Image (tube, rainbow over all chains, first blue to last red; front, side, top):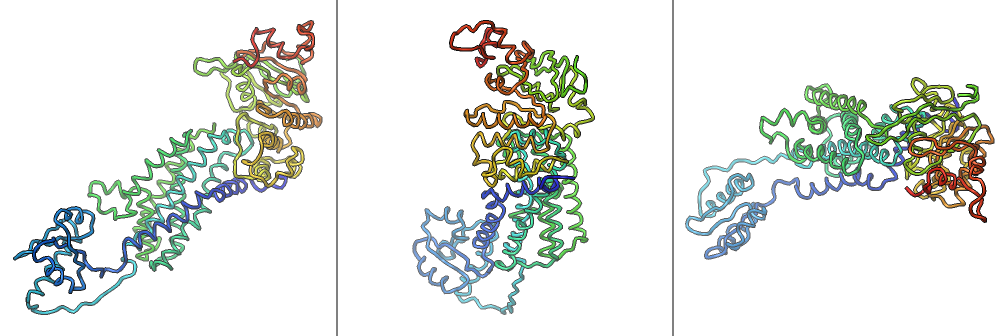
Length: 349
Length: 253
């Protein structure tokens, strides 16, 4: 066969798509820089050390200064004076975990629903009673254990990786197809002898090549800068990422199969992605949702990716472990069903 | 159909196409010979694009018969696409690919045809081979689009308003490319609403209005039907032919 200097159409289509992606600075930002910025921001906002002093407020008035001196002697507390009028705001914003009103006995003002406030109450109460001369019957020996992988940021990075995988798959594929349709390029392509399956396959293939740096960057950053453990195998991480990206690619094709405008495609992508960012446990554990919602939450493709990545990275699970295998099964279903529907209803004009 | 089958490049009989409540093509019949350059002329909304897209296999007619290179679209689509060059109205090629990359992409779809370097030379875009499509002028984009259509060395070239919106110099450049294609034995169907373009390029012209052919002949014969020029300094044009047959100006609608 003579292709006049061109390669196989599938290769040329994939190359064309890759070139377009790499020539789009915004795409590179979202795929590479954004996850790093997120990880850094999270690392700063949630420091790994658990020994930061507890911020407590002391209501200004008689006895406040003496109380502040007593509390400041304890390294476990960071006391500050708070005006009565400002108390509500300081508590709400988390500036202080608890406000103490001087008196005999003093009054502790705090929200018992907040874990930090309950902890602050214990530390404060202990410090004040000891300062008042309470004898301790005994002092327990303390052994500090710092478990790498138990920090919030370690838990967060696989979540951000999952968010990146689904985001690029859905955005990248849906947007590029809708753009080609709007420019009447899809119509021009099917007016040539190009095979339609080659076109769709190239979209997914280009997206997969893009996946390598996209997963590697947060992984390397997490491992070597943040100190996140990598207990499972790299191959398992790679396979879950690959299956996840393929699976979400089907979703991207489905969204793009008939859409004709950027507004419509943006709306649909947001409608699908935003609830998943909340529901799939990227930023906080999905187990916080009530039991009735759990079947739904567990069936989401992003939950499957994120849970599988966490199991592999943080717990060293293998692909054969029941949890990871189940998540891969969920992803396979998400890959096949939307893909089949997309092919059936796809509009080339 | 009076022509011998072997001489016919493409033809249609009794073509009908309706959109909702508008009849775009209303019983249109055409037969174009191999090696001919045939023009479809008419105002916007006359049914030119619908007709050419039916020949291109992109639209299905509601009624009527279509035959291209002796084949029906049904069952021969892949074979026909290998032998046709198509340029659509309003196609915007990918902005961030270079001229050469775009041509390589289209060339890869064809089993045979010219080399990419040859195509670049043919449409005079060698100096722009590494430029992004977004950086090209309107005329250069249109020549690239025609080069994509020529990538598979087609027997037939379908062009939908190839020079709309181009400056006079770019139009002449494109006409040159099309004339060379004809010299090599190719057949062309083009739509246009430029009368001078049809007069320069086409062997025969069908004037289409409201989905029907209202006149079909060589540009010369059509102009001759006008008789004496009504304005002394102005020899008759196809514009006048349209005016005489419909009582309207061609670009009025």
